[in-house]
Image 1 (cartoon, one colour):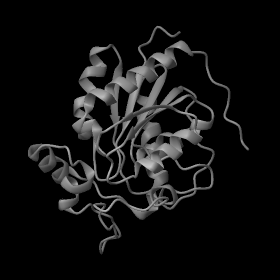
Image 2 (spheres, rainbow, N blue to C red):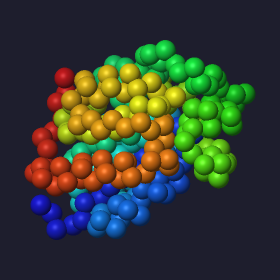
Image 3 (cartoon, rainbow, N blue to C red):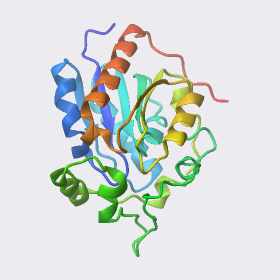
Image 4 (cartoon, one colour):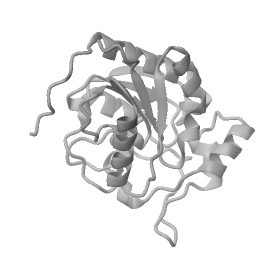
Length: 241
């Protein structure tokens, strides 16, 4: 194994930014990992993958990628040969030929899930009330205020692009299923985790456990990092078919 510390790159989902990982970063750093949050512009799927790739270039050694919600698709689209494991936190994981929207709308939405539509500028914002109802119903009033204030809108160009061969077909994956998710039905999460043959951790948490249940998120990331260190030899190049 390389003498360089393993790096953990965190990718935020829609309607969030890097600050959503605030409760995750310090515990991982305390374990000796180099931790960095990738700033995704949410302007197009291609832009987001490029931003993730630039972040990976900034860190040393082997990498564990962690994606929350929409960013599950983003972490599975990089082609960096330094990535050793993937972690999906209530993540969206389209298969080859599928779009993010395909899996997001696979099952009937939760009764409290908000209706989503682009505004006059072609951007999709999450209604303020939806943060408490669906995005993070277990968050405190203070946390909800911050989440709503820093939200980054997402472009339809992020969710309508067909996925190429996802990296989870070539690397070990871990999946935290949020059983009380009001944005991505738990049924959909179990479906995606099963078909990628992920190591699954299922918890009664909301859509944003990186804020409301940080301990279970840190635990699954540490599991993935340990697994990656146990399987350190470079992976083979991804298959093309």
